[in-house]
Image 1 (cartoon, rainbow, N blue to C red):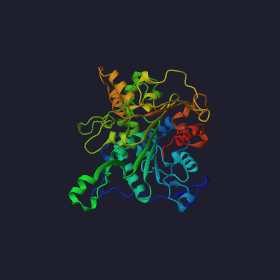
Image 2 (cartoon, rainbow, N blue to C red):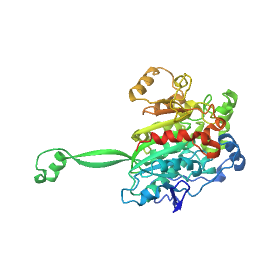
Image 3 (cartoon, rainbow, N blue to C red):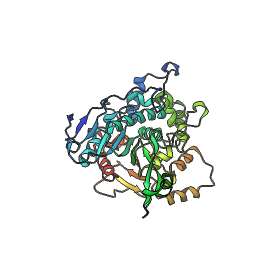
Image 4 (cartoon, one colour):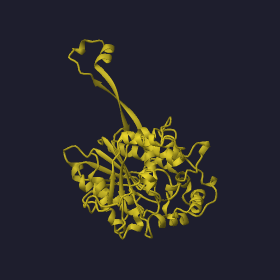
Length: 419
């Protein structure tokens, strides 16, 4: 074990086994690069995306994919940390992007959590598409759970495209666990026949699980839940219709299959775009049932200065639902948290019924699908920060020296984390 500066230790993770269709429970994806159309060089694409999403600084690649945990807590005679937190990076990202947040988790909750920063989708692999990345993440999560057999609960924390990948992965990892529970009675049930015993004194209950664990928090930071298609959903295009149309048509040239998914331009085997399919359950992927299984679902969104992901798509709102009042700091401990909105199931039904007669477009369909479950919305503003122009990275503190103003957002997440 290697000690970090924060007092936590890093436990090297063995590489995820190569997917084998003959033994894997999850469906692998294989692509032949030679079958793809010609496109710009990888170095050009990566440099373009880096400049747009991270600012002009060096990308740090961490291929170790360590687990963060407190050594003393893990070695103590008391029960080891039982809550596994999976952190997922965004496009052109890596496990290193969540290093700061992972360290803060372990500092604040040393005896409660084990934090795993996903490593299976980094750098150029983030061009492979939401489904392919989701399958890889699901396999990785299963391997981590196997390595930590004492964990009982699981949460996901994801940034940008990683939020969509995590939503796909939990649909793959979703399952029911069947348990038998005694029904309260004063009868001497030991004298009953087995069949009668089963009927009268036992009841079978089903509990939703993710990778065999109890799902707790599903948290996203600046994730394009509604995709990047539509007015101002990709803010650096300045809302110009011509540029937005061209972006939809050419996104795959820059971001590969992931670009097609983000702009809803995919039609694999004649199927509807993947993001539309992900707002409902299918026969083999229970996307919404998996989301519903979590105790909390939280969407952190940049209200301004995020040039990569628009406010509507990251907070899963319609334009008229965005807060119209001046965005003001609501708690001095979190100077960049400017609006917090909780939502009940009744409020969701009311909003849906009020627009029931309207023609549904793609964005509206995704909103209706995703708001079948309640979400907490947390709006963030770096308007007065010198780091506002890299808000997409600052909200997660991707690189501390450049994104340190987002630390209070990380603390807000941890302080409200459901254990």
